[in-house]
Length: 88
Image (cartoon, rainbow, N blue to C red; front, side):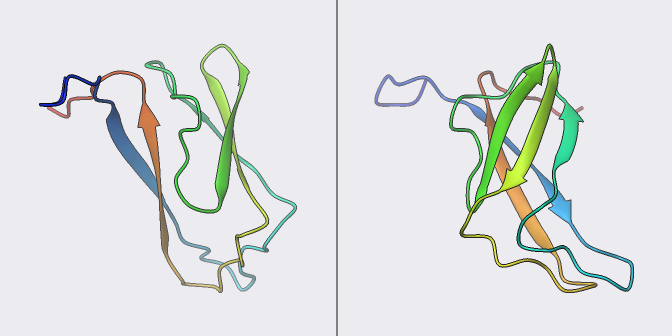
Protein backbone atom coordinates (compact mmCIF):
# COMPACT_ATOMS: atom_id res chain seq x y z
CA UNK A 1 0.00 0.00 0.00
CA UNK A 2 1.07 3.52 -0.62
CA UNK A 3 1.26 6.14 2.11
CA UNK A 4 -2.30 7.18 1.16
CA UNK A 5 -3.55 3.62 1.81
CA UNK A 6 -4.33 2.77 -1.82
CA UNK A 7 -3.14 -0.52 -3.27
CA UNK A 8 0.00 -0.30 -5.36
CA UNK A 9 0.55 -2.26 -8.56
CA UNK A 10 3.66 -3.54 -10.26
CA UNK A 11 4.62 -1.68 -13.42
CA UNK A 12 6.51 -3.40 -16.20
CA UNK A 13 7.01 -2.87 -19.89
CA UNK A 14 8.23 -4.08 -23.22
CA UNK A 15 10.40 -2.34 -25.79
CA UNK A 16 9.18 -2.29 -29.39
CA UNK A 17 11.85 -1.88 -32.08
CA UNK A 18 11.13 -2.80 -35.72
CA UNK A 19 14.38 -4.28 -37.02
CA UNK A 20 13.44 -5.09 -40.61
CA UNK A 21 13.19 -2.80 -43.60
CA UNK A 22 9.56 -1.99 -42.81
CA UNK A 23 8.45 -0.12 -39.73
CA UNK A 24 5.51 -0.90 -37.48
CA UNK A 25 2.30 0.55 -38.97
CA UNK A 26 -0.09 2.71 -36.97
CA UNK A 27 -2.83 0.02 -37.09
CA UNK A 28 -3.43 -3.58 -38.16
CA UNK A 29 -1.11 -5.49 -35.80
CA UNK A 30 -1.17 -7.08 -32.34
CA UNK A 31 1.41 -8.43 -29.92
CA UNK A 32 0.43 -11.52 -27.92
CA UNK A 33 2.09 -12.34 -24.60
CA UNK A 34 1.62 -14.46 -21.48
CA UNK A 35 1.61 -13.07 -17.96
CA UNK A 36 1.04 -15.52 -15.12
CA UNK A 37 0.49 -12.71 -12.58
CA UNK A 38 -2.22 -11.21 -14.80
CA UNK A 39 -2.55 -7.70 -16.15
CA UNK A 40 -4.56 -4.98 -14.43
CA UNK A 41 -7.69 -3.50 -16.03
CA UNK A 42 -6.88 -0.38 -18.04
CA UNK A 43 -3.25 -1.51 -17.75
CA UNK A 44 -1.63 -0.04 -20.86
CA UNK A 45 -0.15 3.43 -20.74
CA UNK A 46 0.07 5.49 -23.90
CA UNK A 47 -1.58 4.74 -27.25
CA UNK A 48 -2.22 1.03 -26.62
CA UNK A 49 -4.90 -1.26 -25.25
CA UNK A 50 -4.41 -4.64 -23.56
CA UNK A 51 -7.09 -7.32 -23.64
CA UNK A 52 -7.32 -10.71 -21.94
CA UNK A 53 -7.59 -13.40 -24.64
CA UNK A 54 -7.79 -16.56 -22.53
CA UNK A 55 -6.14 -17.72 -19.32
CA UNK A 56 -2.77 -15.97 -19.05
CA UNK A 57 -2.70 -14.91 -22.74
CA UNK A 58 -3.06 -11.17 -23.46
CA UNK A 59 -3.12 -9.03 -26.59
CA UNK A 60 -1.57 -5.57 -26.94
CA UNK A 61 -2.94 -3.46 -29.82
CA UNK A 62 -2.39 0.13 -30.91
CA UNK A 63 -5.17 2.67 -30.43
CA UNK A 64 -5.95 5.63 -32.69
CA UNK A 65 -3.24 7.70 -30.97
CA UNK A 66 -0.38 5.45 -32.16
CA UNK A 67 1.49 6.97 -35.14
CA UNK A 68 3.61 3.91 -35.98
CA UNK A 69 7.35 3.29 -35.67
CA UNK A 70 10.02 3.68 -38.34
CA UNK A 71 12.63 0.89 -38.74
CA UNK A 72 15.10 1.09 -35.85
CA UNK A 73 12.93 3.50 -33.84
CA UNK A 74 12.27 2.36 -30.25
CA UNK A 75 9.22 2.79 -28.02
CA UNK A 76 8.81 1.52 -24.46
CA UNK A 77 5.28 0.28 -23.63
CA UNK A 78 4.42 0.26 -19.92
CA UNK A 79 1.58 -1.63 -18.27
CA UNK A 80 0.42 -2.50 -14.76
CA UNK A 81 0.14 -5.82 -12.95
CA UNK A 82 -2.50 -6.31 -10.24
CA UNK A 83 0.27 -7.44 -7.87
CA UNK A 84 3.76 -6.26 -7.05
CA UNK A 85 6.43 -7.85 -9.23
CA UNK A 86 9.95 -8.65 -8.08
CA UNK A 87 13.01 -9.23 -10.24
CA UNK A 88 15.68 -11.45 -8.70
